[in-house]
Image (cartoon, rainbow, N blue to C red; front, side):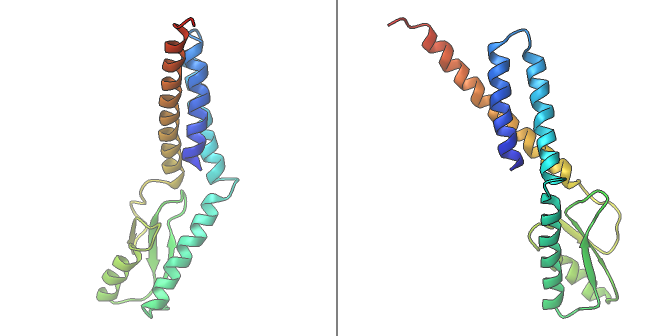
Length: 157
């Protein structure tokens, strides 16, 4: 959804920017801010971050139960929310290394560790980056449409 929102905003902002020469940079700046704001709304008030957290932590719990180490707990790093899983609880060295390896293979987890240091890229920043990528694709689409409009404008049938 953040990519799609960025794509739609990029097309609209590109249409305004390529047709109005005077307000080109203002249109592009408003488009970038709107794409990032839509990504932030999707992750925050729309609840995508909570759904993602619930789904990934359910996968972490299932992996821990599958490997029969119920005294170990795992959750995603919060404050800000990242894709890094933090594990806690009693385990020997072999269990620690193997469980961290298995948890890092859970879909949605980038890495797993037993300490909360070096959290990684916040999920909201990933969403904003995806929205900006969608914005650039939308801007490219608007540019192609504007080139076609200019090309067709030169013909008088």
